[in-house]
Image (tube, rainbow, N blue to C red; front, side, top):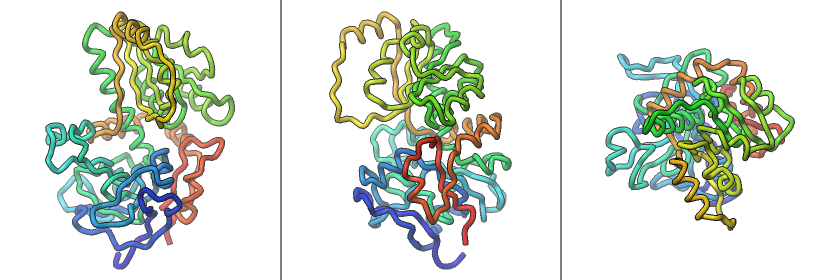
Length: 354
């Protein structure tokens, strides 16, 4: 294990700087658990970081190792702990702020109040896109051994596990017996949100623009409904809407459209820069008179990762495998960052290392 590891790095804020580097072995300060990386999932955040839109390197470093959706296998771990060599693990992304705020102090770092947290592969802390990394045990989540081909989906699943937890918390404000769920967007987050909705026994309808490719079949095989039109009618009797696109016009379209006492969860991040006309008075009237709730949700803490691991463990392995539409060797990582027409979730494959 002496010497160096390969890692995908960027100069944050500068487009065209992503490359496969040789960097030193992960430092012991990162944690006592040594993990070999098997796969890194690619999402829009990675694309934006590589494009130079945002991202920050660790203190004192120029380059950032990217990769926040991970799957790895433990090589070494302290004796007597919960982790042992051979275990499959996923690394948690966010770390609490150093102050810490009230939420970070109790492990709710996904709800950090002061914004001083760091995130592996995104802001202030190197990510998981290297042959090996080190991690503290409390930030490594064990997954079932037979999820070795699909466990990289755990991080995005943790995001929707948190969303569903908060939806259910809000629902308990009154007698609430939800049955109908609408999800906008059939990307990985939308499809995984649909999976968790179906696991809860709800009637789920997923809206997206495409009419071919893998998405309609993936939704159908969940026992859910796939639609490309009729959103207004579907929303009118929806108890829950989960918006997963971040498309600003679509966000406005679903505001105030749920059934009475409905809940709208926003998980997509809008790019901004576009002005739209909205009848704010009408939206306010509909929200107030309907006792509706609109909230945003992002990131996850450890219990959400554990809930996600349970959800994946209960899911059909072949269905999960169909979400991963491309496995790109690490030497060709740049191709994974370019969207292909039938992409759902491309991954960068570290498993076949020299």
